[in-house]
Length: 247
Image 1 (cartoon, one colour):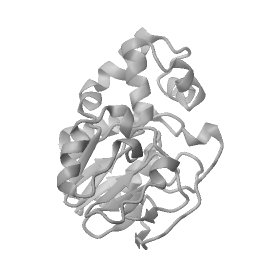
Image 2 (cartoon, helix red, strand yellow; image 1 turned 90 degrees about the vertical axis):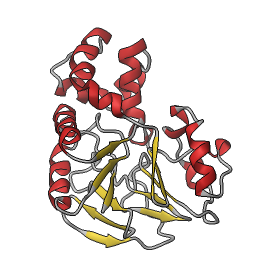
Image 3 (cartoon, one colour; image 1 turned 120 degrees about the vertical axis):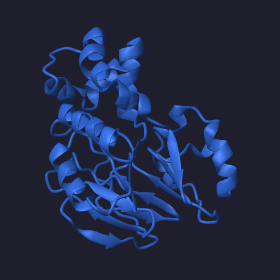
Image 4 (cartoon, rainbow, N blue to C red; image 1 turned 60 degrees about the vertical axis):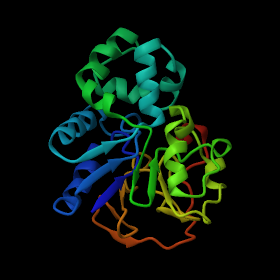
């Protein structure tokens, strides 16, 4: 089975529990991005995922938080964004006190260079497109998976990273594909008009689950071992409408 894992945001304990529940059943693990910032320990998450990459069939996608750290290390951009949206916790996890470009490059990027280099904008598995935050509607008119494959390859990374309400309002129910995404945190998995939202706010609350979606069965499993079949047209509440938690 192919499983897509939602936003981790440093939640190493929930990640380990989820992997235990998927062991022996997952032939491929796909991750939607946002591996660090906000949660329990981002450094331990990066250690765990890079080890997983070397030893398991994995595909890692780029999230907006990952993109911000890469861009800061490369060009010094996104400093205010990182400090405002969970980056201070990541600095603590790495034993750093200030956001200094050279230190981030040495401590956060270089030890995990193989991992960061592997991050993709999107992937396609069977009749499912997977990306961090869907796609920007202004960039998307494709009604078939065949057309989508060509169109996706022409889009820059930013088109996959920051979409929220605009993507949720985009109707793809007439297409022949599903779209799995993270970024927007729901209390339970989102399933509407062939869109599958699997960020369930793992870093927002101790009881919030880390969720994985099975492509073949259209079902989910979370870090507690709870398994559910998705019900079409399920519109759960988001975890928060505050700017701090929506990024």
